[in-house]
Image 1: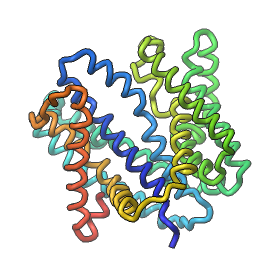
Image 2: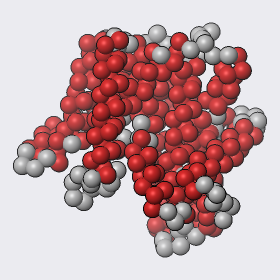
Image 3: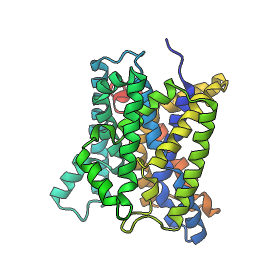
Length: 343
């Protein structure tokens, strides 16, 4: 039996907490203090690494050639995602109907929303798609040079799609090249998926590691400054520089991932600490599925109490959502067969 990689379990838990913070951000609107809003506007620019990191962690395990990954196991993973989607989608749709969230929609609009699921279920579609192309990516992962070629294409094409297409004058040229080239296989989250395996298998040298950390910090400050000064293109959202597949976010996510795989992995976790980390990690998928329901429920039913210290409203709200989600998932996993399938 292979030793559990607690550093990745811990990283998964931290990424899950970050997701909850993002989805609880609306609680800040309850505070009538411009200073608090400005504080969280800046803080929110640090949140966008969590989804790429989730994908990297999955890639580390699913693409490792030394691990057996028969097609049957891949289909089981997709089946679990489908079961979770169907179960929780019903719960969310009932909640949305009775909460009045669909009051402005006709029956066709409601059906369309039901097919898509709640707003955060896009991740389920994406990760299921990555699982389905895993057999092809595993063939690439077996060869280092081929993996590096794929990642080079990923960075170049994603970079063009990320920023170069918005440049004046030459942006149109990059846009045409990006669209006509149709290199869709190396775009999207498939690059992050393969990057998770590559960075774990071929750990960078200390010099490269420090360069990665420094670049990540500089890019974060630059993107935060550009966002605050509203340097993003006209018509783009204020999250322009912090979308999941922007090059700077990929670099930041890679830096965090490398730090955990190369540095945190050396930390001697106590038995109690290891048990807690493993417990939270095992429940993280279920927490992801259910947390948005409680975030909306606590916010819309008046159960969210404003803190005496306004800047603390977001962590307080997120902590409540995390705890009630954890308890829910823990109890559901006690149900034989079904419990673990839907969480």
